[in-house]
Length: 618
Picture 1 (tube, rainbow, N blue to C red):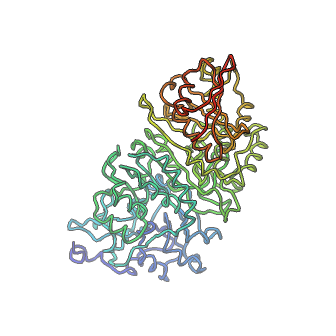
Picture 2 (picture 1 turned 90 degrees about the horizontal axis):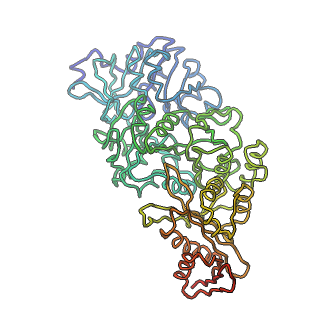
């Protein structure tokens, strides 16, 4: 459409359009990389406008002016999210932070809870029917434009034309300011790659093929995406698309084929990245852009089966409370969409949430897993909303867990040098038993090499991994689920109790080198339960004493036959020469397993009750 021919009275310069704004106006500006830079620069340069209030979701261009005292004599700046370039001004109290769930902001505009007099946004040139696209900034921009009395748009041919509910007709716009300029680019800086790689490794263990994924604002969550490259048929329903998504799209890791809401489409509200990304989304029907009151609505999110939300945080306390928008009293970012997606994912069939964060901050000086949130820190996400927390030291599962269990899970993934302190404080708060042993202070990343899985003869998948202190309740429940004869086969007497004290003795002996316990886990009704335990312990002769116990419904399926060579590999790494085992004479099945693995084993049958079998490694 030729704007000069269709509506010449609306086509004006920036100064002409902005001259229509009155003093004291409440001005909305489009979000982030879609913000109208030319209009913003002209607004600040104008000398006539005074005492105006600016509302913006994520501000980038205005950061060039916040160090100028004259700017704040004329404008008050209210932000729903504080970008990195705005943090200094926010810390100094020059920005008014407006905490709100992203899904609810559009209604605040529509209901005039937040009244808007003017909207300054950027659009693509109109098509032949007169429709412009909001391009890479739909989020709350569409609602801000709809609610404003005076609508001024910058028409930029470099703004991508995106698909979805993101169009506006020129008839509904008061003034059009043609001006071509490159869009704002947002390329995150590389940070500690080793930490990111380890966090990405753990996150990839949780995300399954066919999942629909959301990635929150911030560097870390997006840096995790490359570690999902081995997945298949991922779907995307997220607030913001960044360059990190491109390799997964180009390699067909993201296909959206398994989505239960808008299958075949990437659903999003924003793009923040490079020109390459903007060119990729331009006129690409694979992308479906909608406003935040749709994309971030928990009820809408929940319509995606197997929805996985991945977001970050500044700190997590031992009860599971999450702070993501402030460092103590200093406002750092914003609530954004984290709670929206956490609740939507929790309601999704098969869905769950992941909070990912480095274990430390300030160059390793402080722990991000803390006894309690810092004074002044806001609880963005309650302890009832959190499922998984991931650091470079592992995965903590909190959903359905007591405070005691949460403490142990979270202390286990804290940086090793802070674990004992966290346990000591938890004892003072009476969160855990007074005799609770802290997790090992070693970096146990090597234990990842001991994880394996196998499909059993009955078709069920079983996962094997080392036993951890956070497994205490599952460990005790496992033994209490066993029949008396199974327990007798393991302990040679009818043991009745598997107390906390007994569990503590077990943890005291496990050092993952000279003494090791491997557990077998199966999925049951959405969570894992222990069905087998295999253990070896240093006998002091160069050999380790080995023992197994398997739940009755998993006996005879090859569970022990899989665990035995796994324990052998670990024992060899720790310089053991072989195993020794004491087996009841009636336990012929166990003897067959040992003899099959070690045909040259020596058997001492002199005892009337049991056999001792000595097995040398090859």
